[in-house]
Figure 1 (cartoon, rainbow, N blue to C red):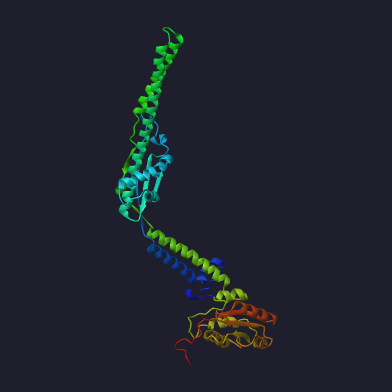
Figure 2 (tube, rainbow, N blue to C red):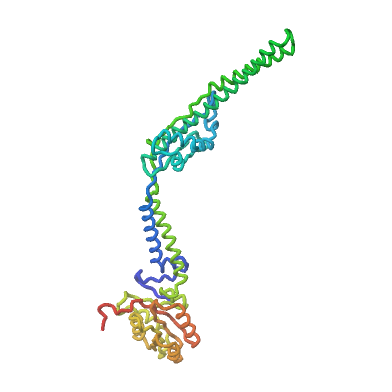
Amino acid sequence: MTVTHAGPEFSDNSLDGSLFATILRRRRKWILLGTVLGLVLSVAYLLLTPPTYTATARVNITALGSEPVPEGRAVSSLVDIPTERQLAASALTTEGAARDLGAGWRASDIGSGLSVSGDPSSSVLGVSYAASDRERAILGADAVARAYLEVRGTLVSERAEAMVESIDERIAQYEQERRELVRSSPAGDVATAVRIDTIDAGVLALQQRRATWSDVSTRAGEIITPASSAEVSTSPVLWRVIALGLLGGLFAGVVMAAVRHRVDRVASHADDVRDLLGVDLLRPQGPYGDTRRWDAAATIAQHGTVAGAPLLVLVDDRNYDARAAADALAAAGPTRRIDLNQARAEVLRDLAGLSRGVLVVPPTWPKAELRGLAEDLRGMGATLVGAVVADARAAVPTGLES
């Protein structure tokens, strides 16, 4: 049995059989509740979470050494970027930045808000510092960038000085050995001459190494974009938090709707009654309170009834709209009306051998009650040819009071 309606308000949604679509259609309030809850939580998070400002200084680092970068090779190939990131975030750097900034700054606080980024294929590092104050974030990022370059240059200088000192010690040892050979060896001694030549060659090689280390470039790099000239990012980002709140709330609402749909013990929707009973729905053709609301449904229900045989109308007489539907069925043809609020045994006795009936109930009946009633009717040989799901409002509409 199919009922077609002119207006979208009373359209038949039976063609959409997916569970997800069913949940969306019947449990919209739960989904709306979840979405609103997500929005409220996101706004609360924004109100309770202080903003964090992150400033970033860009540093271009150079290859340290006495020779220029070979033609055809990139500076990044001569620099170990992962090591440079660790050096920029080291205690040496944060302590230097704290000394530079002065009172009110601690190396541990700087380290906790510091992050360093860098692409291995590039020679540029990003030194970022996060703080609850915009100006403090800028000062911290620029100070760390300066301290990093200073530490990097200092480490190379100290390394070069140590190498020069080591070479000087080795040259002094060679020269001492040469003087002793000259003083103690007889003139014309071949072995002594060979050893002196070896010492002279060693000293020459060390002097060349010393010259190389003495000429090492300690220019560590330069700050190409200070934090004071770059954009300062702020978190949490308003639109992002709101969007995540809405999406999370929507998801939570769908989950709550699915759980509610699964555990609901009441046939709270007309389609629930249809699915439980396995019958077609006789739908209204007008709004609640319209006196002709159930006329078309009554005509369809009476169609096919054997002449003279009344149609069983099992109705919940406590509901005004259910009573109105039962009255419409009676006006369309002979009926035997049975009030479902009496004892089940009395309901079954009143069937009196009739085999075709229509159930008229509001969407407030427990599912177990509907299943039990359907089983009892089948046991008595009665068949439901349709179901009318009345409006859940029990009050008489305004203007229709007797």
